Amino acid sequence: MRKKIILITGAVGEVGQALIQTLTEQGATNLVTMDLQEMPADISGLSKHIQGSILDKALLSRLVSEYEIDTIYHLAALLSTRCEYTPIAAHQVNVEGTLGLLELAAEQSEWRNKPVLFIFPSSIAAYGIPDLETKAQFPQVKEWEWNYPITMYGCNKLYCELLGTYFSRHYRQLASENPIMLDFRCLRFPGLISAFTVPSGGTSDYGPEMLHAAAKDEPYECFVRPDTIIPFMAMPDASNALVQLAQAPRQSISRPVYNVTSFSLTAADIHDLVIQAFPSSQITFNPDVKRQGIVDSWPAGLDDNHAQKDWNWKPAYDVQRCFNEYLIPNIVKRYHT
Image (cartoon, rainbow, N blue to C red; front, side, top):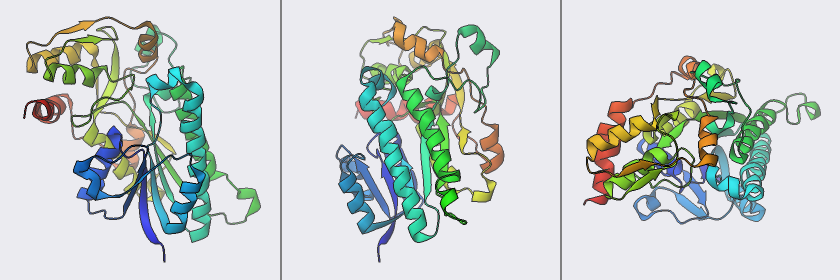
């Protein structure tokens, strides 16, 4: 009999490493992870790791032959900044890779006569607000508002949200009276800040980049204006949100896509918090026109009332706890031990 597993793609990324830790702390021993990169040594023993691409159909076929996939956390993606330089590659990984996994999950759901749970992290990049005046008028944006992304990454994420919704609600319904549909659930994350992994190309990474540069006593040139504002979340809250959504009873899930958030900060706010912790920090502002335009199109805040109501979502880290208890102590330890 095939072993029942939880599959995590893109597991070596920032969210993936945090998720592995969270699931392991909750007692999960059946993790199978996939990534193009090797698993870091400090967490390599927590999962069965497969080094390879989600676009490798032979690899996925071998995976299905060896394991019964109960849950998929599909984190693998090219991130926002890189997508703007390689949009075709972004489409292949972010869309075609997701489509292949959705089809795999749908087939597995039918085979085992029980829905595969498919958890998909989306992004604030799925929004596209036309100008700063409109942004100011919508301080808390709902899931269905301003879904007009201006980046390839945002377009990929929004389309994959729709693909997941289609596969979970409509795929093969006409071919069967009682189709077994996969259980697709999606989170739209704000900017994520991690103390344990280095920023890796996200357009919201100016926040964590300030901190890491300051801890290393290196100058940092911020690529957005001081007044730029978007929502953020500490990485432990992000991994906990994914697990909470996965554990929620299916009958409590009222929608396929949920906003989650914690706190909103301007770049100047982050600068001030960094200076408090690292008084000798050398932080300057030199906005990059392209990236500034992208961040300006994202909401200043997200309305996550549906997540609060349906599965009792609540972040554990507010601004002060995020910086004083999580970010600063751990980043200092990273560079000064």
